[in-house]
Image (cartoon, rainbow over all chains, first blue to last red; front, side, top):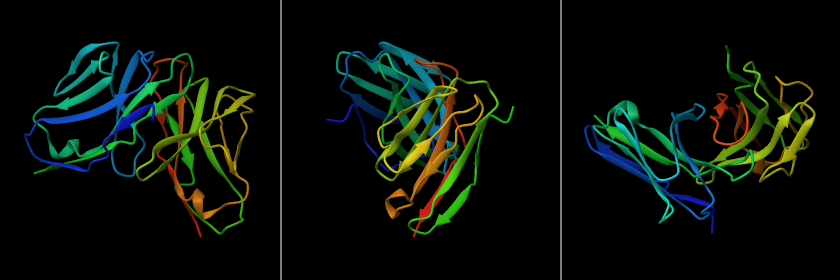
Length: 111
Length: 113
């Protein structure tokens, strides 16, 4: 079993839709959970991060962690064509410098 | 600040050739790493460094060498290119360990024929 699993998509939604992107993980020791956004032919950039369980909101984006089911989510409200990108979940390995990345979900928001 | 820079942006190699992918950062970050990104595989760690003179292997190190003589530079060497090394390569840097943000370069698209 991979340490982090993510549905690769692609996911196509109409403009204004609510988008839900998800990852599951296997190691209950993980404490920090991150989402990176990668536009086509660019490097990934940090979008949001959360610590432990709960929600964190930043504008139209909400990151949610459910440690009991080892499930992390990123919600995008009122999605825009400019949100079209690949979204990668990322988890810093416990006690190491290494990150574990999901495979990324490719999102396309149609105008 | 330029952030993380990578050269070249594109490269085509023939099987068996060697080359060096350059990576530099101007943020005085201790931690630097190299990833490759392939369709359906996500970002896979090749090698990483936690400071000048210290390097270690990641998930997919075979066929690659690294060195870290300065804080700023972290080159990746392909010893004898193979078609399986066709990929997009990203360099990243981070201030320290734990849940710090990784800053990525723009990537190098490498094709090995």
